[in-house]
Image (cartoon, rainbow, N blue to C red; front, side, top):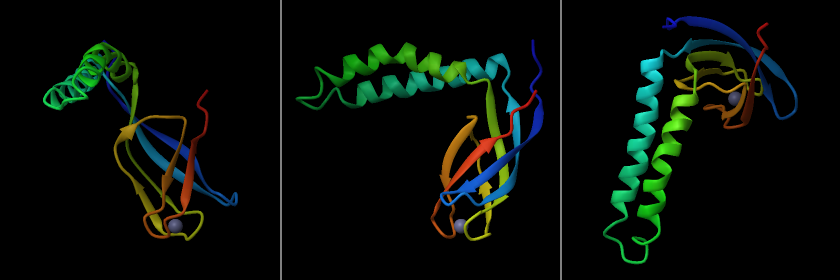
Length: 129
Ligand SMILES: [Zn+2]
């Protein structure tokens, strides 16, 4: 079994007008059991949504069967994620304020919002060879 390990990954944080700041993230490779748990969590959420709509007339012939069917798909989506961002830190390229990133699914690029100036910021990980 592959061991879970933390890696420090550098990223470029950019603003809409192309100003940039460096960012540093801790990314963790998930173990197989964590990936199964993540898949089961999403399957459970899907079926919980299905159950929640059972009492509502007009919805209960559509949404419960749909979300019951989506359960295994949700499992696969949760299971496929191999990396997770544990935390990250940078400065906003727009206002310079410290921006902390919290735990999230790893993506090569994603968009977030500066909590201070509320401008959109774009995070792009530098490719690892
Ligand atoms: Zn800002």
